[in-house]
Image (cartoon, rainbow, N blue to C red):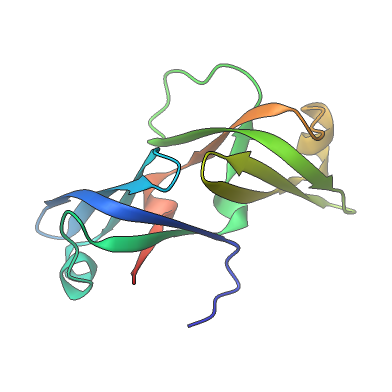
Length: 139
């Protein structure tokens, strides 16, 4: 299956915590980081997710936020450090590519935010993604 979603990070499930309706799934990404996905328990069962299962964490670019300073006191589980590799400005939105250990993320943010954060190649950032914005596909 081909997807228009740019961010497709390979990983391996390390834990599944299932509740009556929702499950949290943690996976170790190729670069060693942990990513958490909050998906339905039915989806976790249908995908056969268990420790050791190969998956892709799939995140829309519009669901990736960027921070240039310290990140503390947030409920956002997925905080991936990286470095900006390119910024493509637009009239309203900018596309920002971020190199992370083992891969790359694309963030679609407002042009105003990209300008105010002074994003440019080489800028260190933290990519932030809520667990509820991470989907999983099994290989």
